[in-house]
Length: 452
Image 1: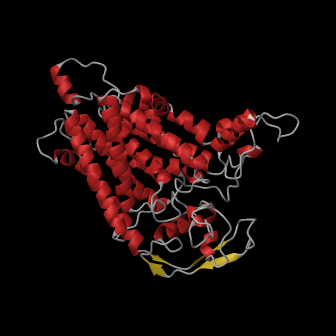
Image 2: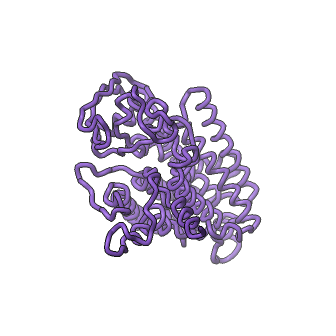
Image 3: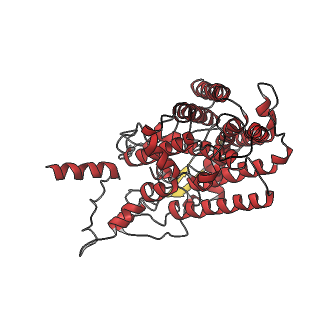
């Protein structure tokens, strides 16, 4: 489950003073009617972010024990597979709210570049392999095997591209939303043009690139094939199976196979393990690629992930420009349902399968549609119905997402506590983690032990 640990609200740096908007009327109408005043915070966005962080921690800690909530081994979409797109959707909404007014394009661009570099730095530090075993108090990474890609790096790319589009096209847009059902799309047509280009490039590469045979050295010391060079036979194009897809081929050629994720979810597939979707010993007839690395946050899949952020920024534009709760909700729910139905249709007609590892178009549609509907529900409950008390824990997590992520999801707090020992490094204040790496279950076991 390490491939989702870095998905903490990377947009939090824009959060506290940028996620404010008039939730009953657009900003332009308010300026015409009365002097500027302090706007109301969109609490539902904080709650949604907090829910996503909580989901991330849940599936990371418990996904190994309950694989139905962990990542799907290949095709399909489990609970864990919604976390990454939810974050990208939230980043998109944050961009729209953060840059609703741009006084200086150069300063805004510098801020975007600085935040992007910060995300890349934290991504390499937290997911590159430096803190690889905090329970054993061991740190450091071999630069020959550092993991270049990760979730924060993916968020950095999506944020950088979409934020620059938002900044560069701001002066070309009219301030007022013209009448018409599709006027909001026309107002931000450049965003959708970039989205269309991203989709065309992604589809052209994933279905058009020839994938040759490839080989790798088994790096798992627990494997009977450790040190052997194994070959994977491909020689095809347009395949979306684990060994011969274009996403993996581009990552092997550009990143290098030693810099890819060593524990992909496909190792739990039926072709590889006897106990799929659980982890376990490989089948005797398991294909060679079951032992190979694969990068779930690779180059081509991260390019496709930009689409999730573009959809999110559109929802932010609707929040800014549309005048009433009803008009916003009609637009959000209709678009969310349309995306959901399109993605499900593509999957079940076998046109384009749902696949998080490849970040397919059907996966973009289903997860973005789900994000739209979940956010709309929170908007009704929190910002319209003012039912905030029951969501206060999620709102606090959402407003302090980076802190919660670093301390909880990345195990920094556990590592800190575990660093204090008596006489022997094994004598710590924290129970040794179970083999399935579940902090929550470990805590429950300690509680039961104390009660006994």
